[in-house]
Image (cartoon, rainbow, N blue to C red):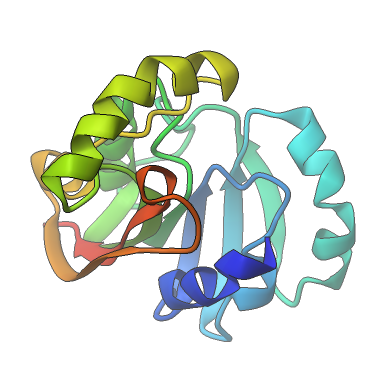
Length: 186
């Protein structure tokens, strides 16, 4: 969605070297990869997403390969990537803690995880609605969770957050609570 382009641009800023993108989807981040990116290893379970990405892949200025299907089990050696990217993905990964541990494993020491995710709102009243509506959201939106604590999940995986912005994007607050940031692998 074009409404999310500013957040995609911010999340991609600073990516460099070899990058693993978790939840590549239909390639909506491709136009925002900085010139410092050497290659993208795209992890995407949905064949349809990859098919929808075709035009973006054809216009990409960096090599992009489909390199995995499951963020919870990455097919890469330890210390392979300089950067990782996740945009609107952590809400649907069944075991997000395992996926973040895998991202940390494949990043070089000092490597960065760049992310923008929807999740737990900063306000208690909105959080209460997220908790109430989460079972419905999961059932109708492919396992999407409204109320995951993105900051807490990233920190629990052992990353050190170096930049973080929690805010509301466009739309109903229970859906539009965003966490955008960069975290460093030890």
